[in-house]
Amino acid sequence: MKLLEIIGGFVIRRFEEFGTIILLYAETMKQLTRKPRIGHIIAQMSHLGVDSLMIVSLTLLFTGVVFTLQTAHEFIRFGAQSTVGGVIAIAIGRELGPVLVGVVCAGRVGAAITAEISTMKVTEQIDALKVMAVSPVNYLIVPRMIACMIVVPILTVFGDIIGVAGGWVVATQYSGISSYMFMNSIKIFATIYDLTGGMIKAIFFGNAIAVLGCYYGLNCPEGAEGVGKATTKTVVTSIIVIFILNAILTFIIYSK
Image (cartoon, rainbow, N blue to C red; front, top):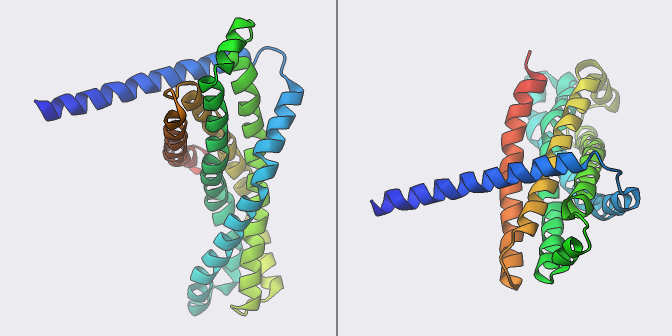
């Protein structure tokens, strides 16, 4: 009975948390109909997007390098070296690019959003907004959500280019594949839909990261320890949601 009680309590808490997130998301969608704070959105895009360029570049660069190292030799062994560039481009454009950028942003952007908002809650700045009749959802969540939905797809495109470039360097300088063969296989096998499909995924990933980051920030426990716990929850939950969304969106976008 004790075990069943623990399991039941865990399930109830998760459903309660899920319902609260849905209500917050609905309120955020409602607030989107109001006039957006353009200056605030641009500031968040700079803070959340531009500052993430370096880590996204390094992540996708070495992903492209390692992926090409692992696959090029096998393709050459079976006489399929003319498909290496296309396979690299499709894999990065459809899956590796958006998912890795989403995971990086969950750690970098989601944690930053939660730490900032939870600190505002602990220091009673959010209560001050309510006293001044300013909606915390409109002032805090909407600009961050719009900014994430814009910058995460842009970072994904940037990361895709860097990842393919890393694969090109390894394929031409290490695996002995000519530059023309690599680029021509991309032209033959990859399509623009491989890139746009990844960007659609990235929009959903950015949306989830922003909403979860704001939710855990607004509902963090009191004290400095609570800020740390809320930040950890944001990163873990965002990564799990990204993988779930990736599976669902892959079925929808790329199913024949």
